[in-house]
Length: 83
Image (tube, rainbow, N blue to C red):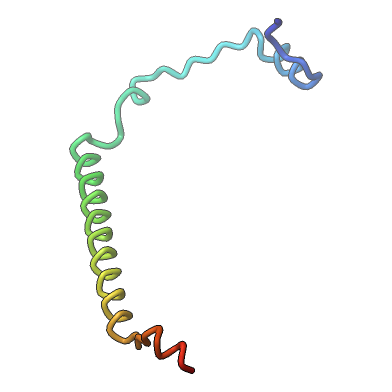
């Protein structure tokens, strides 16, 4: 099994960039732009909001089921059979 470019355009790209060296290691690239505390605070806030949304959705679903069950008009099967 061989490794390498199989198509013509890929072979051309490999030939073009075979001897190119890239150096992008500067000190600014290794320093985080966002502090860890700010990131943890944002993640915690997002998780808290999501938990609140889930709790509200659960409560709303329960209330909706209650409203539907109270407004439903139940008819016994014996009455349905008579008509």
